[in-house]
Image (cartoon, rainbow, N blue to C red; front, side, top):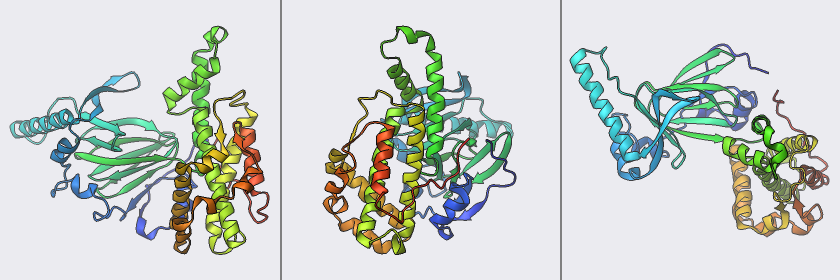
Length: 406
């Protein structure tokens, strides 16, 4: 089901927007927005270290600090298959090419007037995952693409973004220090009006979990169809499909299910801790409890869909040992971060000290959790674990409250 959107992308002062308002107006409705006022230079070193006093990218800084790093650079004037042609080079070489292009363009302008310009191919350092940054000179153009995770573009230098859905185009200019929220599944294109650096963050949560699952399911069916002719001679056809899915999409069913299981564990641990600590999931902690319950409801819904389509059937490798997870310091850290994050976004600062000082042994009642299950290796196991974990919380509902994705 497409989204029929007309008009301009809304611009909002992020400092005047609460998390709940952001969810209700944009994230839950899967609508774009430009956020201003959030990139304070005092808290964003990129706003000063990466940019000159004139507001241009600090090429010298990047060349000095990241010069030896290898990156993928796109040739914006050359198509290769369905994307721009890519070339691996050092950051220092990319910087050198940008400076050379800049000098050449300036010379052409001097000789031919303002309408003149260099005909050299424009390089674009896209998706530099090492430092989560995109770097491109003036006039680069990133072809129409979409993500199924939410995406934030943090602009350290001037940038313009275009979004489209069903051939209805929305255009906006994103100035330095502004953030654009790109909803799940929205095609978008980028055209740099000036030399540009942008920081990008892709993520998913309970509000767009179904988008990610639908993407995996679609890509899985495509991967399976491509190699259907070797199914009868393949010893592990399903394993091959999952490996191809991971290579093409970045994760497969097993990766996604493992994430779901650990995220469900963390949410359930915190929800039950709040219930023990305050006697119920109402009162001062209710907004956090509702958020956790919504997450669990969304996770249960996806697990139910995986169960009905027999995903992970016969799985023996994807096993989440609940007791080992509780004893793992990394899981303890995850729970603490989730707890602190939710106290912050729901403005319950008086609860944050609980997660700062509480040990994992206090946060988790191991004997209590052991009663539900010791391992999760199927969607049915995860459903039972969630159901049993919230069964005693009489005032807690885990029905998902986000729209379905067609």
